[in-house]
Every structure is written in C-alpha cells, then in structure tokens.
Length: 290
Ligand code: C2E
Ligand code: MG
Ligand code: MG
Ligand code: MG
Image (cartoon, rainbow, N blue to C red; front, side, top):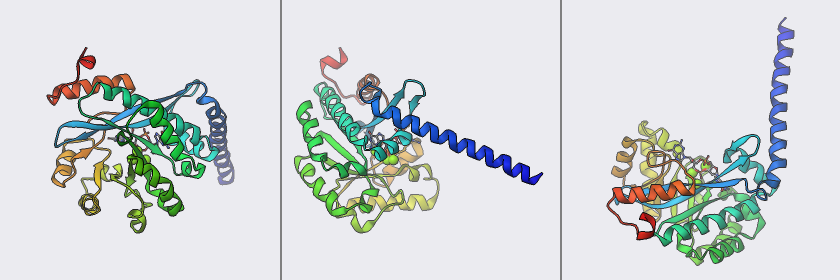
C-alpha cells in the first residue's frame, strides 16, 4: 500500500511539475507578442519624505495584463523576460513610457518628482543601456536628474568593471543610480563603493521584521553606512506608523510602502498627488486642480 501511495504522490508531483512547465512555456510564447499587443501597463508607487511630508518621486513597477490568464506579477514574468532576452525591448519600453509620464506630471507640479525604473542585471549584457537611457530622455524631454535607475545587489556578482563602465556615462548625464533591495543577501560590501550609486534602498524584508531587535540593529547600521558613504537612503515596504516612527528616529526620512500607497495606474497617481499636496498644504498649478 505504501508503494502505491508513493506512486500516487509521484504522479501528483509530476502533474504539478508538468502544469508549471506548460504555464511557463505558454507565458514565454505570449511574452514575445505582449509588447506589440500593448499588454503592459506601468503602475507607479510614490516615495515619501516623512520629514517634509511630501512625495519626492515614484517607482515604475511593470504589470502584464495577459488576455487569458489575467494580471501576471513581475516576479513571474521578469525572470522569463531575462532568460529569453525580451527584457531588453521591455526595459526600453518601460524607460520610454516612464520618462514621458514623468515629464507630463512635472509640467503641473511645483516641486519636481522623479521616476525610477528597475533594471535587470541582464540588461547590462546587451551593452546598449546608455543608448536606451539617452533616447528615452531625448524623446520625452525629461531632464536626466529626474530619472533614476534601480539596480539590485546581484550586480556585484556580475562583471563589476563592465557594469561600472556602462554606468559611468549614464551617471555623468545626471541620472541617479540606486541600489535596490539592499541587504537582501547577495550583498558584497567589498564592491558597493565601486559602483556609482547615489541611493540605498533598504530591502523590505527588514521592514517586515522590524519588530525584531536584531533587524532594527541592521536597519540602523545600513542607515549609518549610507551616511558614511554619503548616500541617500530610503526604506521600502513601510506599512505601519510604528515603522515610520522607528525609521525617523533612526535618521531615515525617505520611505515607500503600502502605508503611503500601493502602486497605482497613472490616472490614480495624478489624483493621489493632488490629494497629498492638498494635505501637506502645497499647491499645484491651475491645470492639475482644474
Ligand atoms: P522591487 O523593485 O523591489 O519593488 C518593490 C516591490 O514591493 C513591488 O512589487 C511593490 O509592489 C512591493 N511593495 C511596495 N510596497 C510594499 C509594502 O508596503 N509591502 C509589501 N509587502 N510589498 C510592497 P512588484 O510590483 O510585484 O514588483 C516585484 C519586483 O519585480 C520588483 O521589486 C522589481 O525587482 C521587479 N520589477 C518590477 N517592474 C520591473 C521592471 O519594469 N523591470 C525590471 N527589470 N524589474 C521589474
Ligand atoms: Mg525597485
Ligand atoms: Mg526593492
Ligand atoms: Mg525586488
């Protein structure tokens, strides 16, 4: 009987693996035409300065509306895009769209609001990131200082010299480079000072466990490290008032997370910005208020 059960389990396992494999192959096939069919949409999540009570920027987070399977999360399709090389045209599209959107909302705002775009390590293999960034800025009219590229620590396991060589001209244009998911586990403190970062984003894992004294100690240390290296620091995944109070007492006033807002479509962001500016007593120009 044990034998039979074992066999059944094997079958179940097998079926599940097969289903996963089929879904993956399906997604891979459909991803190839997703750009052409306009199935991507960017959601934007504000970054908040809690000491000045205002939004300082937004992060572009990509969503895929699959015609049959519905909304697919980036954690599922980005790895497929990376493996197939589709990440290059996808990133080019995100950069272009994000810069156009950012240019537009800055026309109506008194204080500038930057946009950040996530970069896969594999985009560096294509060797044309500089061209992609230049053309996105040129076609949108956005000033370079309002664009930020978020790169994860995994970059340091790549060819650091090559990455630095590619980032240098981009940094020189005035584009901000930030290290995403800092502390997530791939970190090599040995190379962090080699890469021209300007901002550290504390991984949301620390925020989720910030009731643990050890995690709080690590957050403190990252904030201190950022100050020592003359970097800006922002915490992601902020969901509660306790976390906000802790971060402020630790010297980190830039934050991002569901407490402030979930990522949202462009139209909702525009409304959110209007409201947040009314709340903080800041004004928008006529055109936004209407
Ligand atoms: P990330 O860049 O670290 O983005 C933060 C993720 O945390 C987002 O998930 C965001 O929705 C989520 N998040 C924000 N605030 C909170 C919070 O308070 N609590 C919790 N639990 N989560 C929060 P999302 O949008 O699913 O994106 C996941 C990852 O996919 C991103 O992580 C990024 O690495 C990648 N990604 C998204 N868009 C792109 C893109 O255009 N290109 C590339 N290469 N990667 C992208
Ligand atoms: Mg990010
Ligand atoms: Mg992150
Ligand atoms: Mg991430």
